[in-house]
Length: 96
Image (cartoon, rainbow, N blue to C red; front, side, top):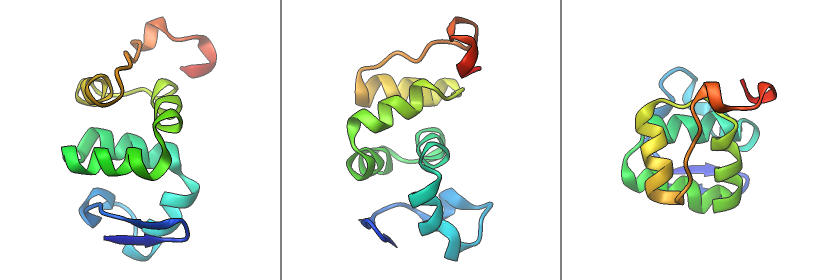
């Protein structure tokens, strides 16, 4: 369980292996795109559901649509949000 200024979220701290533990709440508040992509690529099904609840379905969709995702994250976006993430070649230039 991680406490942030916006509430608590049940995510494994190991998802954020590359930043100091004390900076995780800051990342959750300031780097939502990075956090959402990280959780969709490496998190459990429960953690993906948590991140959608934390940020909201529409914001998560918006963030994922402008991100370059690995195939597993695209599959999770389709499963959880019913959204198809286009391949990099199909994206408008400002999203590449």
